[in-house]
Length: 234
Length: 239
Image 1 (cartoon, rainbow over the protein chains, first blue to last red):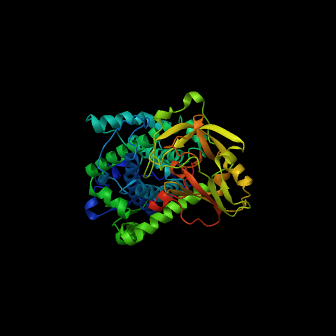
Image 2 (image 1 turned 90 degrees about the vertical axis):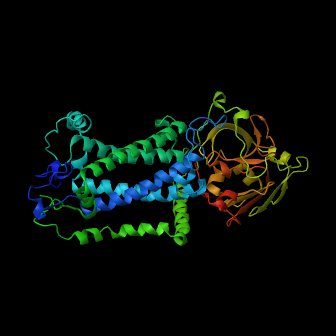
Image 3 (image 1 turned 180 degrees about the vertical axis):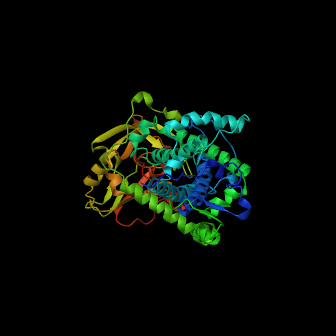
């Protein structure tokens, strides 16, 4: 097992927007993101976009969680905002990119586990105490808690949740796709109807994560964005 | 210090690091119209293939109590052109052809003479809605044995009075709940639900359960995959 990668890096190197070093003017850099992480990140951002867009088009074919008769539509937005054009086209995108989405997720988690880096992002019980101070800092102008690890408790919670949501999106999707073969899983989810509710709820949660993620990237600036491209943060 | 955490006096090799991501540009091929359709077709084929691999011929679709049935008047009728193609029920017979020992015409009475199975199962439409429905009929496996179908043939192919057509892989056809249905809710099939004979396949997506059957062929090569399949829906689509 490789040593934990937190070493002497603190989260301020990653999120605070303050330079990693006071001497950043001489372009000292920190290699934050190994290429497998960056590769999976961008591949996943594409496949998640396609899965969400085609999934919404599929949902438009019956935008309800109730009976077909009488049908009560929950949403009504233009298909132009979705991917696939029509139900059959959307299914093609969904059933093709599902493979890319799943394989990317498997590769990423495998890399994180085998490199030991998963400990940087895995939310564990001792992180619970650190969540509220970070929430207070971000949303209620509280003092910024001192940081001792690569990622703060709230970040770990977000990144761990994203992985869990990825797994749940796959499991709920498999039940919707093959409810008979995976009837055991369907039972765990409360049946076919609930699996559909969960599948869409997972999408909602992932969208919430992505919005939060993009807001943080926007707030913390260009250097964080570049480091997900090149690996190096100046 | 792990290899992936490095510090440097300068930021080197940014270009090389970016180049490591260049394979991602291959995703752009999905934006090229010429390649998009065949790629998506391959993706659906892969999904179909995988789900045919985890299909278990002896795994039963869940069945439901009568109290859980969707009432007949709440069972949505989906057709691709007409609700009632005007089948003459008096003179109707199913034409059986292909890789069978006893091809020919089979009347409804001949089909109904075989053992009857009735079940309450979930009908799942590709659109996303579903219904718990009650159908009765003869097992496809019993009928195929009756007409002497070659058990190693790969597909069933059916044609319908409304010019709809469908194909069905043999493993799904032989699943013990797969029916040639002539009853629903303990009454003869209604016209809009496919009288006098239709497929009822609890292990397949709804559009595979073709209505108003007129022809049934046992074959290794299907002439066409199916009406909706030819519009771009998956060909296998098991449940």
